[in-house]
Image (cartoon, rainbow, N blue to C red; front, side):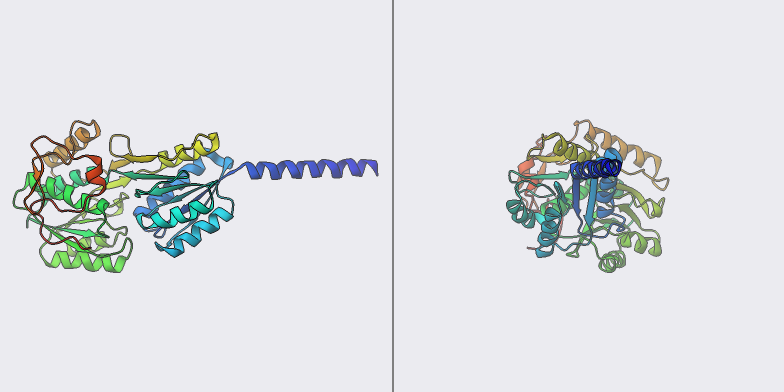
Length: 357
């Protein structure tokens, strides 16, 4: 009887120890605007989540919810994660900004990280990548390779991040090809393959032989492949299944190192509210392999631009530049400040059409 009691006590002690170890796990939550299989934006964020699991093993537990609409649904999803014991939650879309702040105010002990946003709190950090650096490289290739001088751009929402990308791509396409014209189609979605395909087809019918996108699915790649003689660029993810044509290169969002560092900070008790905006140099933005369909001299030019940006020797927004209305913006050699870029709400000179409200 005494022996049985000892065994029972030992088992109880082991059970309590196991429970304590389970409680010590850092729980990391992710809220995604699209499905993890979108092949673009959400896919790369989920790759970052997997990098966290690989880096920390059984010290972490990760959870995610995909295809969460921006708005009240996001607030409910984050609330459930916080109630479920999440120590840190990554909210990975611009439209989650106010929901993040609302939920963070209710859970001051939970850390929140908001991608591409600009509102912070004591327990809310913001982070983004300088995608416009990659757009400069894409614009250079696009301007060199177009035969019709017509480039189409599928845009999601008229927020500064997207406007910066359009401007950067246009500036650099125009630098190498003064005859280039841009047509922008706003689809008001991050992920809707049908809408994205329709936009690509409409641009192709209008004569565009280069399609750029700031949306998340591979539908524009498929539309270009079907049309033939149209080149594209992977967005957020490599989309290499469409290489060497139509996809000739890509912008790859590399979130893993950031996610690992921020989870480590939570574990160490050193997490602080910060604002991170990194680009090609620190490795948050990568340029996907430039395919064999790109002429060697164009590839060399694009890679030289990539390397100059990475080294801090060149800024994609360097004057002289004017705004669309002809007013002066940047003087010769002057570069744009981060404040202007973060709130960019205007086209540069040469772009046609209006930015929607």
